[in-house]
Length: 309
Figure (cartoon, rainbow, N blue to C red):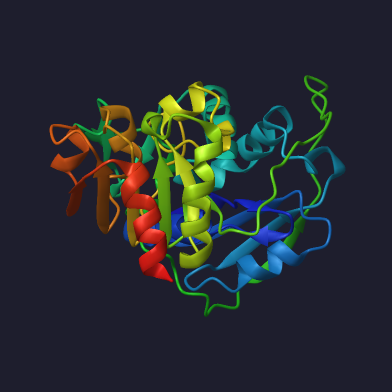
């Protein structure tokens, strides 16, 4: 039994979700190979080779894969599929774009967003915005799986896998890469930050997020938001935490002015410690919070900043 994992990386840096996916693959068992595409410098392939438990890294250097277009990447994965019992990817933007297309090409079902490996054929995944867990069993020859990174510990980087170069991809001519518009910040990336402070509709205005940013800078935290705050135009949509945003599981999650709609809870309830600040004592967020403060955020947040010095 062999497993192929599509690596997640950005700007020449291997994303931590790849390490989490390797941990999930180890629980399945078998030989683990990683596929790296869009890495002309070879830096990501070297980082992938250092992950413990990985036997081989396949580096696809073809220019058609440079921007990880799903229309070009899925056929490459299909061509490799015969040698693998499982093909996995982190459940992020690239994984969610590529893996359904691969499953269709292979005529198999996709098993999405798994949070637990029961055995090589059986997995657990959340449904109904995380309010229920579904156990999925598959008899497909090749299982196509996306992994929720926050549900698995990161694999150690103590390996020395061999790197093998592939040059077998072609441009399908179905899509064209135009440009990327990326937000830049000196704060940690939202999905990997150890501390996250998020604001909701209660912030009332985008300018008020400056209060949270001051605290985030003191704590070395990332800033997030509920969908209500994003839809209201307070902050960009890459701040969004929730079922239709980013899933986070930091050591500390601080929810400010967030009522706790089920869709938001689905994206942060696995956080190790949850602190909620809301003036409505009946807010659903208090049902999952480890610590709750019933207070007007415009009084509590400046006081918190003052206490942090």
